[in-house]
Amino acid sequence: MPKEKTKFVCGECGYETAKWFGRCPSCNSWNTLVEMTVKEAPKRSAMSAGHGAVKLASVEGSDAERTGTGIGELDRVLGGGIVAGSVILIGGDPGIGKSTLLMQAASNLLKSAAVLYVSGEESKAQLKLRAARCGVSGELLVMTETSISAIENEVERVKPAFLIIDSIQTMVCTEIASAAGSITQIREVTAALTRIAKVNGCAVFIVGHVTKEGAIAGPRLLEHMVDTVLYFEGDRHDAFRLLRAVKNRFGSTNEIGIFEMRGDGMAEVSDPSEMFLSGNNDTGCAVTCVMEGNRPILVEIQSLLASTVYANPRRMAAGMDGNRLMLLLAVLERRAGIRTGERDVYTNVVGGIRVDDRGADLAVVLAVTGSVFDKRLPERTAVIGEVSLTGEIRPVDRMLNRVNECVRRGYTRVIAPYFSGIKTVEGAEIVTVRSVRDALETLV
Image (cartoon, rainbow, N blue to C red):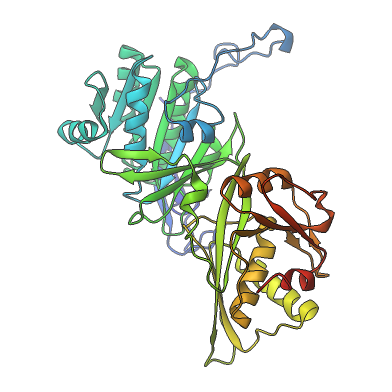
């Protein structure tokens, strides 16, 4: 008989200990340790478990091609498609479109293989309503179950090529005496789903809810157990959604997918540059081109300065790093003599995208300066460049791709770093600048 033992598990970080503490030694959270009773599994030898060491040369390589989901933006984020036997975790706020996107992907995957959709949150009738809205055929296999054992038995019976779990917080392992959604349950269920994927060669999609901090609910270990982690970003009351990969064992984590929520489901956005531009050329606005993976995207930076009534002026940045904004304001004051210490400074990236590209530095500088002096950039002008602490405008990677994207969107004038090596481009006038002071002279 397997022995039973008691341990305490932190509900925030998953830390395990043999005795109870009022405060978790790992994450320092109070009153989060929960008592768990677990059974020790019988020991198995390495040979009986099939895990004996073998020579690398004797291992057969897998040349299986990726399976496309029929959704170009999703395939882009996945690295070109779905790898057989992979486990993909999709997180996001409630109502942002996780289940809708997977239902649409299931509709396309049905054309080539069997798909099993398991829901622990909806009934079969509710699933049919959503499937009808998304145009999913009746060949989709649906199951409303929360027991991972029952799901594993059904997978063995129907042998689907793709398994969708919605959501991981509702699934339970009946051998563990804890509620669904607890740290231990999420970890054990994810381990069971990973085993199903690797043994049966079945690609598994897992829907995960997120906490108030924006992280997937459950221990951080959950993200390490799966092969790919995707996050849906954006306001659920807004039409546009961003799908970003934060981990991908089979592809790049630099790509993003852009979708628009419509009445019949998620629609791909073929030209994201148009989505992030407001079209006006007012004071305090500057258009730049950032790289998201291999994709150049035009974004608009807006800035607003206001008189402050507080001793310490506010610095607020929506869609960009606030520390980077303060650094650029310090460069402006020290290298160009523009003081903002007596005003509140607000910056915003139009469209809800988050910009971490240093190529947007010059756009922030010109937007803030334009707001200070009530000046604007000339019509159809884009700016690209990194601002150093010395006030020098430095080039960034893939400058030519960025400039060509600006030209494609109708911008006939591009302000670029002097040392970028780009002097002429068909369809656009290239204005090169060496320093912040040179760049400020382009404002009219």
